[in-house]
Length: 575
Figure (cartoon, helix red, strand yellow):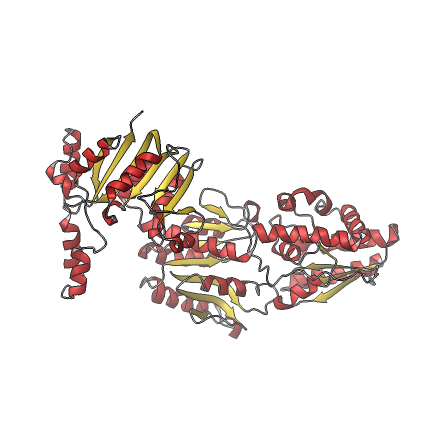
């Protein structure tokens, strides 16, 4: 899969966006090629299948110059269909600008957003994008079926926990907070909590280090106010602003701390809190979104937004806590991140969503829709599901039956392992590894023609189906020569004999299903055909003739046999 990813920066040393460098590395390992279009670039080291194009902001390029670079990349990669998907990371305006090119060429457009702000540009980008991805429902103001929550992607190898060391007997606790120096981070509540600990509770054996930078004049004015507040509250020996820190150096800062605090008012699942959790230190936050993340530890780790007294209580409790108990709490938090918010599962999910969007945009044929509409039941078996690059039919069945359990069965284990977010079993269609009378529905699509003994496979299907269960079947029609002839005639190189053989015959198709013979075989196995049609007609107006024949109840009228695929539903007879 070839992907164009549009984002703000490619720089592993950037204190805010440095984490995306690991994203791009892991994503590149899962795609054929990754084209990065960034506003600015800095220090990076990517594998050979990654190409980086900067819009020139690092050199002071203005908006017109950046737009020109953007349009050139769109024309070179999207207009010529050299990429299979466009993914926009945290830049809604570029999703809006890329949408016309993607719509024109039929390329899926996906957007990642983790910010609670709502504005017309974001709404427009969401309407134009095929799918919007976010870390959690609280991470965006957008809602609807096209908003998909994936969890955050924390590099748990980079943010590894500190090895257990014998207690040094040191009483002073090191507290850390990381984030931009801005009003939304609410550092004033942290300063106020420190003042309560020092002035009211006579607790002085702690140091709060705040790492962050100012990015505009408003931030700098706010920073001046915070420094004045520290002097006014008399906590200048306990609260320190340490300046910005490169993203590569942040893990070590976390590991050298005992407690992490975040007073951020954004309301979303904050990535900084998850990074601190990954390093194995207790992480205190006012963000209500973490109530479900912390699980049964939320009472100890959450305080109300802006409530300095509650924060002071949380800090006092963890400062007084024995070192071993703090380590145990941190280890539990790390396990939560490893299970639900680690980087590799997120990258698998992103590639899955891009493939799903691409295939559902183009690959959802009338045959697929017809089969998916008729599959149902509590337990569904999909035989041969892992053969395609993306199992469109498998996920179409799952999408239409969200309460059902869909199990895939395929002969090749390596192909099953490539299909993420599926439940797969390795097994042979002629000897299914399941008990008798267990499935409500079995999908057997485009497999019959590949088998030397298809009757044995159908016998196994009849065995594992419950009485009253449904067989959903499809196979290429033996009476569709125009399908291959048309593909051959319109190929750019019709004189190429390899091309002729590829389009006029498929060497993996051993046999075709004759409708009447297949009906008799199914009846002999205890399966009664209840519906049968052909799909993908290749002759103009033939569909009208076929529909007329169906209306007259003429099964497999001669013209209808020339469709591209034979589709049927058969019900297992009651015993």
